[in-house]
Length: 242
Image (cartoon, rainbow, N blue to C red; front, side, top):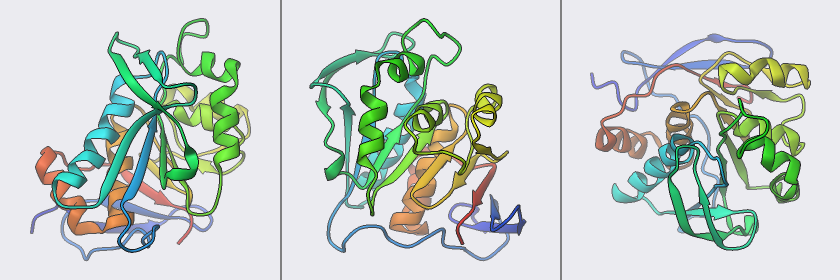
């Protein structure tokens, strides 16, 4: 049996949590219900900023773009919390023509990380100190909006007051920091706490985005995206709301 789109259910993990491990040999398990009105595209906004880790945003961008390629109604935009313009990624990638963010027109907001190890450089610490992105994220919360934190983007979401003491995950080098801030950090590749989904370090953002494609659009489109990308999901998705 093809492993794509097939889940192996694992034992319950923690209070009110259930672990799902990608693999072959078991029946499908739907990760959640559709989160938008029928007939309307899934609107995904990916926030970028100076010092952003390239794969943190490019992985989810590829996944949601591929979902459209395989026939799904998905609209994906790179956005900034400031005025329309550009930014430079951690490894020098220059992004231009990035649109200003209107969180009211999004169903999913992806928050990548970057620069966690450099407190004085561009990246998550500079964004937290500036306050504009964290304020926008805090004010954006509303019914129907799901936030996907990727890698140390979860640190930004915590600084915005979105995470608090909720279950989450992040890059392994940032876990102690978040635990020290009171977050309920779990050892899973993806943690799904309803309207807050967190993915671990860097490439985990691909798994987090695929999980949301599965949750919002169904396992068949998610499997088609995997096949198109020649990517196989791995690790554990911890669902805390089942």
